[in-house]
Image (tube, rainbow, N blue to C red):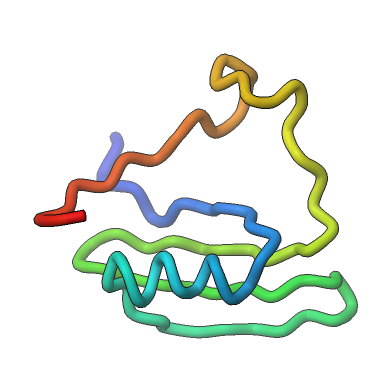
Amino acid sequence: MFKNVHHIAIIGTDYIKTREFYVDKLGFEVISEHNRPEKNDIIINVKRENVVLEIFIKEDAPLRAPLPNPENTGLRHLAFKVKDV
């Protein structure tokens, strides 16, 4: 039986912009951060209320092709409800 979503994994390429968006603008709290040089990435785990995001920062991550087509398989989008933009 489904209980809840444990976490959502997202891949970004720009550490500063990604952290600024989720932490500074959306108000997620950083619960852990791991620099993994052997995998050439950084993992930032953030939480807001009952939503946990596992954000992988990989500067060399390939773009989904062909862009911008949201009908490709994989993550289509995440929608956040905010008080004010």
